[in-house]
Length: 281
Image 1 (cartoon, helix red, strand yellow):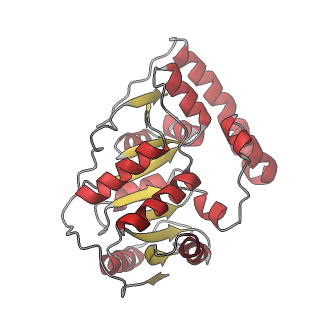
Image 2: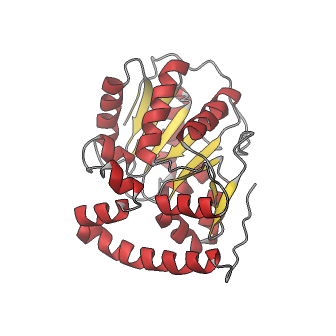
């Protein structure tokens, strides 16, 4: 864990509780089993994040696919956390298909690893700074090195590798102090769902940062630990199958449980046989 406190601060004052409401233009959401997924595309998602940083609106971004939607079916607190987010991007093609059925014709997939790349590209031009939180030992530092190589001039002001459990009081104070020193504009979280969503909801008002973005497997993708799927596999909505074939022992139980349940429940919703309330800000 480290903090590059010698790097210049962003120059934007922060303090007190931030407003997690989405910026104007990003309010339309698809209702995916009661989870509000914004009807957005990559360019619009990046603009929303840039506006939130620039104006100080603040909040957290959930990159949500079928896994997150189904976790939210058995955890009302998680559903509330996602629906309270600044931005919920459609991480998987099934969420996009549901959105298009509901009339959101311009909705496109906003995949976490791709979102990270586009936000980093934007941040170099805007001189926004980054903090990287998550991954196994050494992953955050390696990711920082790769991003510096890929985006010359990018300002990565700190990294933190958390334990495989909730932070204790001392660790939370340590993290808070690091972030207070570096004051990053964008705080990346690379944990699994629902850990990253719950951590962002808990910490985004406590940390001296503007926007938190949970991107899950992006850390492993951008450090080469996980091989990304080909573009045609992603577009066909088969990335889950690609990941399953890559990591069958770890993911078989998850996908054979989640995918059939999602198909069943979303079919009932699309056919109008079951309604799901959408409670968002």
